[in-house]
Length: 570
Image 1 (cartoon, rainbow, N blue to C red):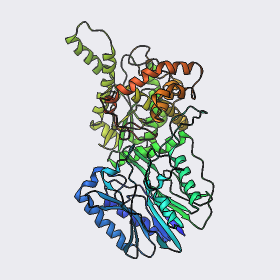
Image 2 (image 1 turned 135 degrees about the vertical axis):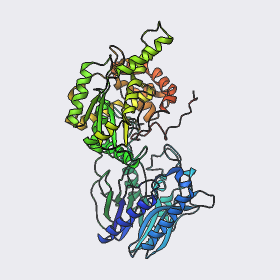
Image 3 (image 1 turned 180 degrees about the vertical axis):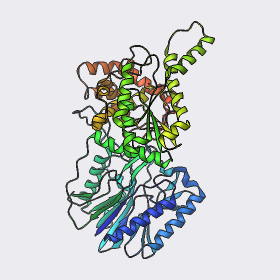
Image 4 (image 1 turned 30 degrees about the horizontal axis):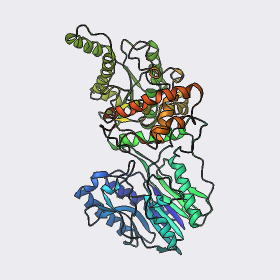
């Protein structure tokens, strides 16, 4: 059976656009010889439109467009993701099998994830019964939806256990082909130093998916077809990953992070599952798509990046150029009295390498004005952390002012301009940023990247990153001689602690032993000494992270929707 998997990039809540996209892709697939056409989960409304799904108008549009697609289906079945009201007032997450201008089968999702970034019980009701197998072209097809695939206790790595197993039920009923329509976000695994391994490390979503799909196809000795969406919405990133796996484990599939039709054939043998890319390659592809999608879907067309001569801002600017093009990126240097000439030179060189517009504003003027204002109330005050924060806020004030400046709009060719946050996860975890200063921005593209992953990404970007930036000691230059590692801990140590405690979510009582698997020598001793302080910072700075821009989830545990820590928790 020749199957067209529609690896789509939906727009959340834009029912008309999504419906038209499905219609066009279905026509193209049928013309290409498809015998079955399948979309991802909730393709009609996008995964997941959250509380938009409570809106009566949206529900009505979904009903109308879903019936329209059902009516236009021909001899080749169109299997697409949608929803319909449940008796409780919530919804059923459904897949409709449409053929010959009518709905032939409706499959309801049985398992509703409510962990990490998922909250499906807020909007959906689980199916009260197992779907029947569908007879088609000599096959008995068992259809399931996303989480229904992840209940198997032999191969699933999900953090919850379910009392039922939808795939086992379909196999027991005699399915000869398993079909799963998903919208499953992707992510890297928990961060580990190069060459290190630990039994508790969390694998990347791609490795988890491989283990699960191959395992189920082999276990039940039937082909398994998996279709997933691509693109980014808010903090979620989807890489597609649509594929067919035969009972022998051979793989057929399409390109990662690419929208289009993925062709598979149940009668053909595939190849070995492709190797996962290096983390730097994966991050470059994923963050580029994540930035482009998030900005475009919000109607934002150009960005400002505060270029400091450091690695974080350089990487952010480089990804912005790949996502938007150099004409839509403005690099802004904001020196104060404590900024070095080296910083300004590196920032200017970085802008030149990227081919972006360049602007230098004197942030010392508003900083000096603020310190003078402070002296009117406290004439005997001396330089302190207050002044460090004032510098950061002076820079932020100027960056935000530029978003509404007519001359900037003219340079960038649009008035839809946003500031990109340039912070990383290592800083966010320890509260090492200034609220209303370097914590500003519409989007934090590196907010789920530990510092080590920022360096991986910089090396992957290659010659577009100024070489001196890669070897420079990280510093915010807020006081003479200040360096980030002196204020926090060596990044190799800090990231190891955060990789274990935050991303792998290991118990606090055994963290010292876990760190011994990753570090050695002086770094291990430093880590053991720094561990209580770093954990204290992680707990005490939650209120600051609540005020950061949203970030794209690229690790097993990101700040934001998937990590809900009370502000008052001890």
